[in-house]
Amino acid sequence: MTNLEKNDPLVYDILQEELKRQCDHLEMIASENFTYPSVMEAMGSVFTNKYAEGYPKKRYYGGCEYADKIEQLAIDRACELFGSKFANVQPNSGSQANQAVYQAFLKPYDKILGMDLSHGGHLTHGAKVNSSGKLYQSFFYGVELDGRINYDRVLDIAKIVKPKMIVCGASAYPRELDFKKFREIADEVGAILFADIAHIAGLVVAGEHPDPFPYCDVVSTTTHKTLRGPRGGVILTNDEEMAKKINSAIFPGIQGGPLVHVIAAKAVGFGENLKPEWKIYAKQVKSNTKVLADVLIKRGYDVVSGGSDNHLVLVSFLNKDFSGKDAEIALNSAGITVNKNTVPGERRSPFVTSGIRIGSPALSARGMKTQEFEVIANKIADILDDIENINLQKEIKEQMKELAQNFIIYDRATY
Ligand code: DSN
Image 1 (cartoon, rainbow, N blue to C red):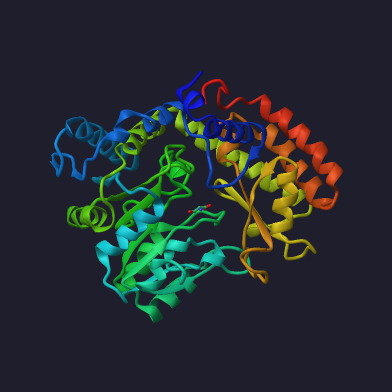
Image 2: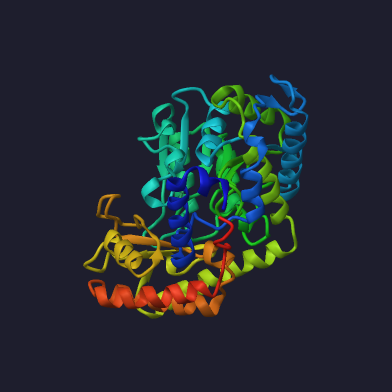
């Protein structure tokens, strides 16, 4: 019996229910993944007890010798992994990483140019409901009706806006980002170029997506999406002066004591990303997405941009009489977890939407390959073809559970 089971059976039971959900459902939310048991061990370690405000060798607390050691290891591994000179591994999340980048280089009311949230950008890239859109004057570029960024258009907008910073990166963009072109645009208008690679970082470090370095001045990422590490953020740069500003912006700027247990887990995650097997995983993520896109196209679905270069596909239902929300609910009833998403040309509210985003990272982490993705993609199409058929959803749910159970991700006795 675990300590949790003995001391707090109520929490233990909820945890077991979530474990069962994660094991029995097919997890296809593009930003989610299954982290390693070793990462979870580090996250649940004694470092959770330690305060370590400051940075290695410059702390405001005693007893930090091992906190220093673990943070320096995480920094060194991050630098090796991303090929950067400096890394701040303290951001508690991608949002906080981005907030710190803005605080480091911008003053209130400075102009930023980012990708529109409804076109696949992120809340923290200047959305008006986020502090990035309240503290700074935010302007946007988007995708064309073909679902792709038109870099000439971005340049036109940048010339009019004259932003202090250009943000490149997205949450729902199925194509490669051209960092070189973004650099040319930034140079033309004298802007700092900031890349948020949260979604694609796992592909970038495997050489399966173009590298933001040397083109971008600053790069942020989360550690839990395609990287499969613990939930958290990182900021990277090659410029020493910029690195100093980033460090001050994180602490004491927007955070206090770092989560040393999560930093330890980041070190473990980076260690996994540095292994040769990582490249095989990243390749598989891309092959699996490609099959997903190909099958859905063959079955008559409108896959935005006509395919995918990365870990996600975006399916548009603008030509259907059901919404992204309807599709999310129907697929969930069949044991397939995805999220509704706005699509280019969107006419519905963000709570309803006309599309879904489907990702391959989590199922690829379970060991599923193109063969399984072909089956799953056809099941997704079967459900969408007959979206009100509850009996079909129940039937597929059982089939998907059986499929999932052939790809064990966690030992239920352990968690
Ligand atoms: N919420 C994440 C996503 O789903 O893309 C981004 O923060």
